[in-house]
Length: 354
Image (cartoon, rainbow, N blue to C red; front, side):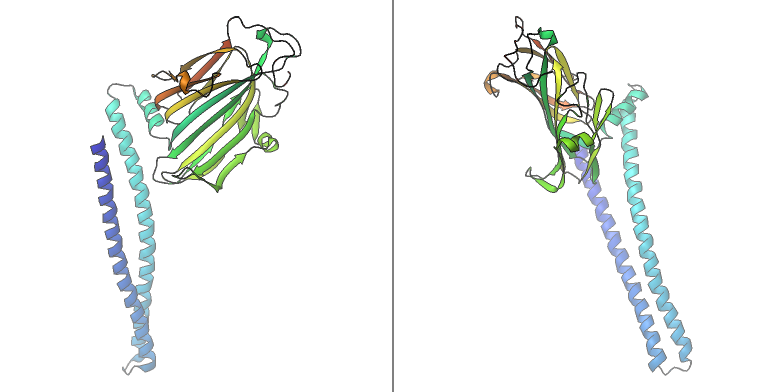
């Protein structure tokens, strides 16, 4: 694989050098013709005003027309060259894509149905971004109850934060768009308009710093509400876009708050391929909810639990997926009350009432 990649790089460099050499030759020839055109116009001026040739007017118009024709030819040649060069580059890129797709299909079509080969190609090669440093954090807090309630009637407030960097893996500037959605099955009287609490999308440099000129930050309740579309129980943030240069990365942070049951589940699926993932859970409040957790993954590799000695505190949990992740793969978090957990009275718990 490395040898083939190095060969492709060498071939691209040779092709680029040939193009530059051709361009230098073209500029040199056009420059000479342009200078000859200027000399012809200048000669026509001299013949008209200072010449001593018998038919002065004939030579004046001849030199003038030849000079103008040469300069016009230079302008036309330059315009055609720019057009043909741009079209040639577009055609070359299209041919590269077609060849890559044909090679990919030729490799796999003998053993896999065409429909699956097409789906594999779309999932692996069409996306222009790869996600890095994915981190999904959950914070569970018990809602304050007005009376003693059985656990199956109590609710939890869940604050979820998703962060990652999406790197442009193409050699051109492309637009990165994000329009996250969330399905809310339990209405929250404190968050009737939108479950989204904050959204950040910004271009980051190699030193992990951001440029305020290339940043989208939604954090005010009014702007988040205005940017949210609701259809039934589904909330979706309107598409947010930033142009990302070749090799650049865009950092995305999304914060969501919602109500869940004491026994419930949550799923997160990536829409781009990614390199690894970290899942974190934290229990807060006085007292914190007593929960057991079960994690699962839509992936061939299993989530690896982080040892207790490496966690933030005794009421936190962490898992890692140390493997590349394809599009539409992700993780599932399930929770339930610990066995023997008693109902909570109105004097305990924290948060908002339901």
